[in-house]
Amino acid sequence: MITRKRLAARACGLLAALAVGLLPANAAADAPTAKEPPKVDLVLDVSGSMRANDIDGQSRMAAAKQAFNEVIDAVPDEVRLGIRTLGADYPGEDKALGCKDTKQLYPVGPLNRAEAKAAVATLAPTGWTPIGPALLGAAQDLEGGDATRRIVLITDGEDTCAPLDPCEVAREIAAKGIHLVIDTLGLVPDAKTRAQLTCIAEATGGTYTSVQHTAELSGRVRQLVDRAADPVVNPVATEGAQRCEGAPLLKPGLYSDRESFGEHRWYRVDVLPGQELRASVSIAADRAVHNDYGVLMRATTVHGREIVRGSEAGDGRTDLLSTGLRYPKAEVDAEDGQTGRGTETVCIQVSNSFSAPASVKTTPGMPVELTIELVDGPDGISDAAAFGLGRGWWLLAALVLTGLAAGLLWGWASRWRVSVWRTN
Image (cartoon, rainbow, N blue to C red):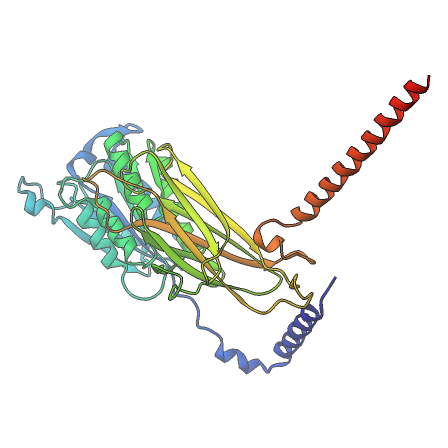
């Protein structure tokens, strides 16, 4: 049944739509400005190992150049593309110099395809593999504005510039909350290279791809550049509090945060009568952790009374753990039969039981992704449903009454059969 409140809301919506249609055309001058073009920085490994001839009968460097030329031809006009190299200039044995060998080959901006191809054509396998410094440089290449940002790293080996761990660099970039995604591609990778590149990608919500053929490299880089031109919704950076009081008030959307081992954080959501809150959380174990761990998400009132919870446990076979909960707020108050008493602030606690060896760094915290949805709940929802029981009370009562009636009927029938038997 449609309530008076919902009918009024729909009428207001119709009037608003009519008003928009009647506004003069010049009112559009106040509309938001167009979104900034997305930025992509291709980071190419030009270290000495790129001389190896094991990709379709040609060197890794030749395969990379061919793929880059094809990608440059296909870059969407709205994408601002740049190219950065690592290991392209210094051929010596001095590690201090070799680990500074990264430069911007082509600046991020409107693409001149001929100039970009000419710059790539000059590259030859040369030096070290300073992946960490190259990622820091690429992040600087992409600074400024509110555009979506993407780094695509193409390499055939591990970083050779420890102790600057490129995985830690990626985590630091992610912790800044600038929504910069790093995708990694490994050319004929070994197990150590695969593990490092996977860690870099997962730290920022990117992807890792193993490449064995030129066509795979070209196709994957083009796909990632196209994805930058038409990105999915990026999470909004937030920071949970140590208690519900003072926690950030979240509206429907996707949010990112960081949570340390064994920590719990609080967030708040306002729920109207008749709405259903749907919340979920994912925590990524982006570093070595002990095998047994869990994630808990629970909703409480502002006074601390638990409403509903969701939890999930892991045993080391997955590096991403997710759970969620649903809370439908009654539109009609069960006590007085009147319309719900207004907006309710629901406190959401996210906790984890991850732990790690003493050698593992605990900062920054592990990536947390939080999804908040508010949808119209089903009509006639009861107060019991608001606490996770739905119409279960009605079902339970029906089962109890049915059992009672069946018991009485069975007892009466048994007595009747005994009396008939004695009579005979």
